[in-house]
Length: 353
Image (cartoon, rainbow, N blue to C red; front, side, top):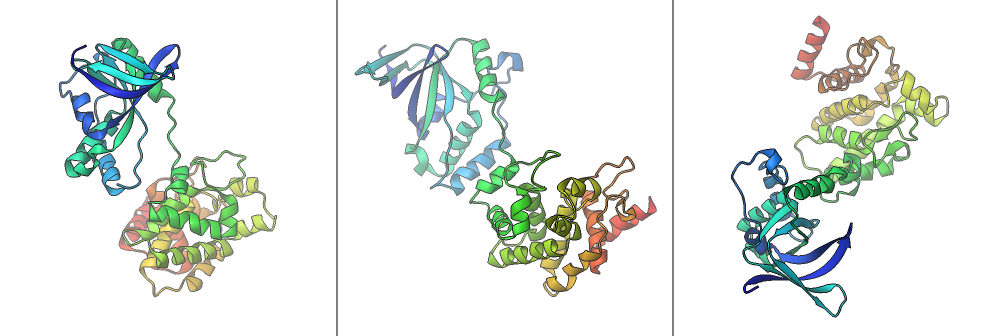
């Protein structure tokens, strides 16, 4: 072939088919993978249409983390003439691809589009590279199947696990540090799963406490003072939450706690988040003056105060945002804290129904 792209590559084999891995400069992506704005029916496309709403988020991730961003490989099919020139029979060599060949992204179209958008704002990235896995194009049906296979078995990371590993999210860092410093929470918070089984050794998920802490923080800065607030707040909740202490003293089993009480339910933890948000905003309210009052709360599922607030007429938990608000109202009443306007309105609506 007279004119061609030349990629240093490593050759591999999967399912009896040859593929090649190349390190491609970011500035080359726009040239290799041309944008196709024409609408094509789904059955005639090799993958889903580009979701433009995802691009700014991924672009921001790149530009905000210039020293630490990371991307997995793109997967692409070559529709056209190519030739592999092997060196020393060791699987490495040069992949020559005709200039008139077409490259089709089988996996990674949003990464590619976000990279191109980031390059427009910061061209310093253009000589950095991303790995691309090249396959021989074998027609639309094969490309559609490749897209399906590459995405079908991809498992989304749980929110809890993401928050456990995320070092950029200061609230996630604060949440896991506070939990690790409170023995009860460190023992009973699952740091990987978002949903716990009936017989799980844990009672809570990391994500539930992260969500509650987000309600406490609101739009304020997650700094050392906030972290100290969280440690004291949750420490006092643990200290004065009677069912949790009954579990510690073995007067209750985990099964009994789950089945007979609402104290381990996510809606309650989030409700404490609302209460904590009020206390954090009103720093004149001393935590050790108000939180001990929750020792008087009846956390049993059959307590009348929870009916229709967090326990439906069918006996099932209600977990929506209104249930969180109404549960928070009960906790604030026990703590003798005033309700905000939205809490009063929700309470009036609840009482009049």
